[in-house]
Image 1 (cartoon, helix red, strand yellow):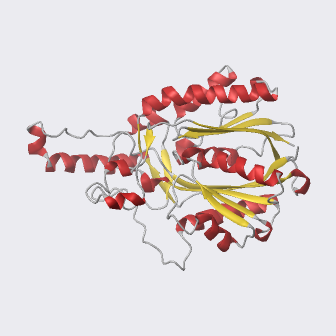
Image 2: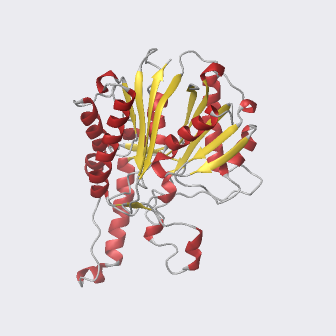
Image 3: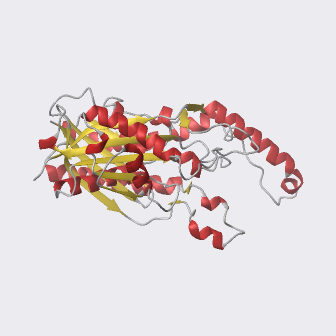
Length: 373
């Protein structure tokens, strides 16, 4: 078997940190304006009054304290409540490519590689800015990479699915140096006027470089020992935005064209699937859970991660065992588990073992077993 390794990783963090306090203040101003403007209908029982949010509610529900956004001015304006980014001309790099280039450059430095050595680019993310040309091909152009490029979307599991896909292409000799990037502007599909979800997402971009171990230039890279990808259809996390929306002008901008979920159902249905998948994968590889040095988990909800850590390890996982970054980054969709990996892997010695796992809409679950060489 050809040994495939992660030789470098990178992270782009947007410039605007937005606290729970800022979000709550804007949301509650919106609620007061809405209730005032619709007072007659509310009094008549024709509409329900909207309820205030609070920092306590947000942190208890999610564990999130802050997040980074590519644009915050419109989000914090109760009359707008969405990011404001001007469209760019076709001959200028898109904002998602700028994010991807920044993350990719870090990964290249870490791996001791040059952009021209890359011959496979995969952009794996929850949302792309357009149908075509592919964002990956735009990135390939502005980065100065060669070979081939393509986009893929498996929602929050896009990164792990992209890594597995790249590893398979490397193992067959189709490519020699693969770049997988995950530019996530989650604020663009978040309903900031929905009390149950207005706080969930943040923006970020991650990148990893993969190559055959025999070609690797760095000491002690992370070997991809095993991988497992599973999908199961569910409507419990959904976003109906797409090019066919224009066929129905009256509903094209409805709330269903933004992120929505049935959180309790997701919690109940996804967590057993994730725990069973990782446990089975460990057994197949002959690894004991007690031998794991680290869990780099999808960063969607603190309670979910605590449940997985406790189920797998048999005790409450420490920050060292299962690093949490969602308190300051929020849910960054496919980028979350890679952020955790990027920030919390350098301290582990040769021989250390870890699980990189993501899960989300689809449902989709991707789990990778990694060992430090």
